[in-house]
View 1 (cartoon, helix red, strand yellow):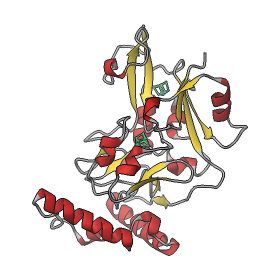
View 2: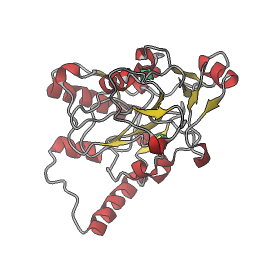
View 3: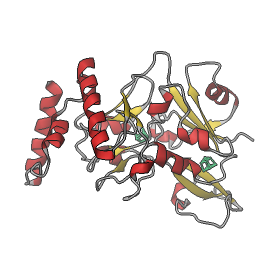
Length: 296
Ligand code: SF4
Ligand code: SF4
């Protein structure tokens, strides 16, 4: 209840500071129920079960489909990590679109959790001179290389530290998640993230019904609402079931590697121990669990 109180007083203060009331008048009762729901981390198992049952019903009514909503927790002994081979990536953006489909990202307004940056080989990694809207006839374009960026799942995530209502946090398996029902849309986390990995739903997200992925996780790819922040979760709905993230599976050149950093036999550990890896913006001490390397 302590968190309930602090969130309400934060909202009240925000409203007073802005000199305007929080606009709840347009919400229907269901939206109000969602709004007043407790922070996910304070829910009992019975409360989680009840919320999931109600969500499945709501999605069935809204999308005409049966959804499987999981709230599967982290498994002991697992800390997820990711590695991307920059010498293999060809900039095809298949990962971007597989991620959009798997994670029910809005098609309009468009949200992409993965962004692929084109850079000039001559200049090396240079964000200031990178191009996210590259569109040559054929990739890879001569003289260029490609650097995909998504949430770096930092060990020291600034995004969670600044959230005034604790709507985002790092799970025991290292995945940084958002409780969409608890997010107040202040976007402090977006300002704090040095990788531009968080995205805000300025409008009601739109996903074609026939393209909706019905296998969802409460803290991941379930349908979002207007006014909340979202980001890559390493496909929490997949990886907690022992599957690879969609971007790893789809990459046609095997540039993407994923696994358990605590398992000495894993491919990710092999890469960390045998390749020269780098993390982005190391000087900021965010300590990403997303590594880049040159395999050849
Ligand atoms: S799918 Fe693979 S090769 Fe294509 S842009 Fe993504 S990481 Fe690069
Ligand atoms: S990349 Fe950004 S959103 Fe992801 S954990 Fe780090 S600070 Fe947070």
